[in-house]
Length: 299
Image (cartoon, rainbow, N blue to C red; front, side, top):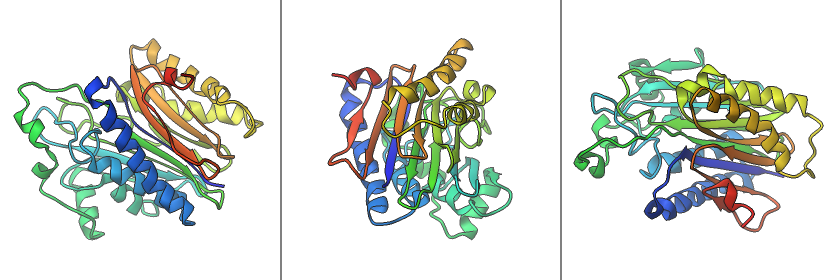
């Protein structure tokens, strides 16, 4: 059995952008599904789905990322596999097409996280896709008379047929932020975590708040406490794992969304943002499931 869940960010989605979010999530899900259905690994599926989301300016990752106060794109990404707890992450990287691929290339390297020019140099050494930093800015961003309020992250969690689980995050950061700003996305235990024995989680939302509360670590502790969770239980069981973490960030004035996947392939998600585009599918499903709001699930 394989299982896959991804999100396009915890945020407010304008009605005219809803179709783009649904279509983008479905396209990314298909990329990950093709890897898993073909016998590929969870790590490769996470990268494949993440690259699709990074290439789509609908989402705040890769092309079309948020601009900092200098009008530049600085991106962060992280990837972790749950068998040996290998982590690869990059922070405030410029001029690369796919930060998630740079993070993947770092999985078996030390240190686990590189920043800024060191991260770009690593990408160049690995012959990954570089670009002019300005090429990541869309025409719409150049023409915009005012800044948006992008602060979201994309995330992917996959379980492959071999029982291995992996998680990846990627973000363009926060619009108008100080150059060099790092949020939760590249930090294991904050924006993401994976453990083959328990599952994996990926967050999106107010990065500083998520990092201050180490929300991914809190969810993993909750999963450990509920290790008896069976694949036959309702998704609501996983909401009970995620909701306390969301209340933690809400208590300090933040909002977030999270996706989780257990070691047995059960997925769940929750958010306190207005919208949270999520898509998921397993080897037992005939079609993908895509939602923009948790409240729409029961409609």
